[in-house]
Image (cartoon, rainbow, N blue to C red):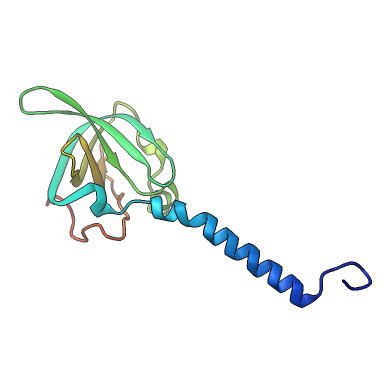
Length: 147
């Protein structure tokens, strides 16, 4: 230590490098836990859903939109579709206030691999006609869904 009880520059650099390395190691599980598109969704099963919004969850790392979809048999199924992160959606001009409960909406995307009423949204079209890109996964198909 020098006369002011501060670590020497070399010691300080070693301490900072060690702290940065520790932060990377502690953050690695969170990065590994983040799933890829292909882990949950099927690029060979495009979907086009028309329904009424029941809930919008604006959360990280993915937002979710839930909508009641009436099938050809008249049965209503509540679907959940994954959107991108709230910040990404905001950068594209979409806000949570645009997704009002009771509002009709159309979603184009891909179905979940498990066959349940879940999917990955690529585009959402609101009742006023505005369309927003909602997906952002690195490995998601690049072509528009359900054309």
